[in-house]
Image (cartoon, rainbow, N blue to C red; front, side):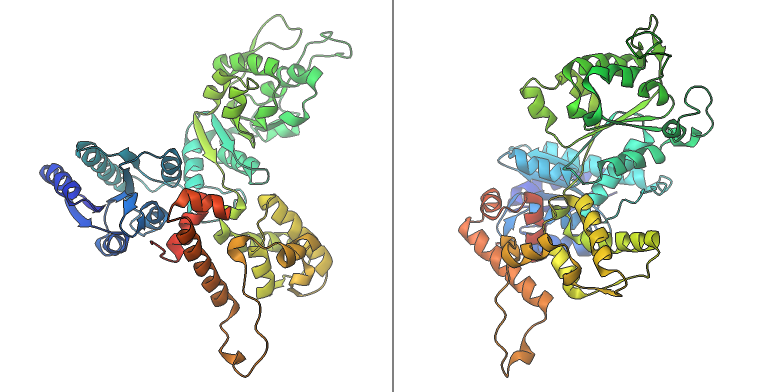
Length: 477
């Protein structure tokens, strides 16, 4: 049977839950605050943890990502007395098993814990999951691990997948990885017929850039056309949907599809049948659909610029990719990987990285995400040429200027002290920056009266990033 830990300031919650779980053999321990709860989770190697959002020494959500990184990887049930939509979204997106609004009845929480422990027992008896081919997806931060877990689930199914995220976060990379890890990829190269002569179709992964579809020829490009269907149609033409038969159809920036095409595509998605422009009969295409967008499709539905019924069909499974600024722990791995890759491509000798360069890169917010980072590394190598070590002087000018004139609020540093006889006692740069970050967070929490949403508004730091920083410095008060 399983071991559960309840982190709550309400003893009666522990007592009633323990009584409900005792008959099925689960043992339950209890902690009244975050500090003792964290110690209990580390020492107890528990299977499941209940953490309350309101604790004497802080918001329990700050413990969530830390708990999920423990070697035992316990399932975490987040409980609250007052529902909060943003908190619920954060919890579920970061791997929580459940998010429950408590009442006087502890039965729902006990049931959720029991199910979580049963799930772990079932997983323990399974064959280890096959390693995912990551397709140049770099990063092992908690948010990326959650996305990769969803990628594996998507690859193992044939459900429609919606990938969301800012420009440059790697949506097409994820789409390709879903296809590469799916059974559909195994059949590539063994096809004949109209797709055999098309290089994109031979890969069995067909990309449709919805922003580049000519408005007057959208349906022809997607569905194909027969000879004579319109002026210039001198022969039959297979559309991209036909080329994706047996493989994966990837609609990039699906929010750009015209409303008329959305209606036509909805039926194709439902029936897997389509009619070429000018054709008299329908054809079949057994494609798997993956779509991506950097737009808010729910808001587009609200504004009547995207069909609600199509959105429901698209998001059978959703993967939301985090911006690079919300996974800073992946930055150095990304820099090293892409520098090595580009050096090999250009025939350059491997480069070394000065600590100052890495600090400057980690201090930049990367609004263009991974795509901007890769382009910047390309520019760095062009400037560095034969230089063996990369320094801040090799960085693009706008990154250097941002460090001088516009550092983000939570990364400002104290002015360098004038040289003196005591300069040898000056802490190293990383230590000083950590001290400044901690002090800033303490002042931020005090100003916001320990209200996390308010602190996010004041600082401009995202909720997930702020929770990570609070956990990093153990700032529970």
